[in-house]
Image (tube, rainbow, N blue to C red; front, side, top):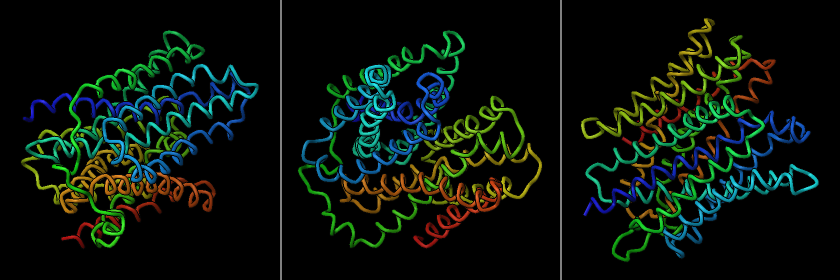
Length: 388
């Protein structure tokens, strides 16, 4: 019974690699867009804001149609949008008088795909028969990290070998990943989270469940704890620690992603021997210590270690919260996962925003900004302790 779902789980793993491509490829091309199309950098950075804002909207709207059209159809639509957006990225800017308009349309397309994937992939894995769903969930989320690492490394190698001017070819290459996975999703079995024709909770039922709001807080804090450092790691290494950009990117965001993926992979392989509550609490304590290291220790090497170990510490927080919520709210269904994704994305946006605002108040001091974001792991530790 379980073996027939192995390919489904593999397709879900690739789905998170697709999401990593969607979220992390375009930022590598910001300066290229600026020089090639003459678009101001401030305008280009709007593409990321629009990407995540649309993903938030899709998170919210998905509760109205995913159960109606089914998980398979929704998965196919998500991959078609992601593939089309990445392909159009290479085509549309040259077809419009204003290249930014072409870029914007491409981003809108793949943002819809990315938002749907975030809502769909976790519940499909949760619905697949397995001996330890927490292990499967942690392994699943590790693939986003490996996807991020792969996007940066493969793109860097491509640019070195063939020049950044050929980025459109690479965009088409990346588009092949969701296109191929879309075909896979037409063939694998796709279980529903609520089996045997049962119905999930209605939104009023879900909203009246007190523990649902606790998990929403935990997801918000998980996303904020992760992205508050991840999004600012490169800038902190370069500006706050005085390290050159290449080394800063490798020692900052790359080290962060590798260690975050390592934490998820570790739990994915050994989760049956580990108490998830204790593992999450220990990880949050390490996260708090890492934030303190970044904010208070003036030695540059210590700051880099703090950034890296933040990645290690936050690895289990997002997938662990997903697993706990699914186990605690049995009939949550698609709505539960959609709102958890929404809360997580709000945290992913709010964490870096808080860092930026506080840093600006203190003369662009990123140490103080990141230190202020320690409120998120502190709140998460309190929330997990309250749940017990």
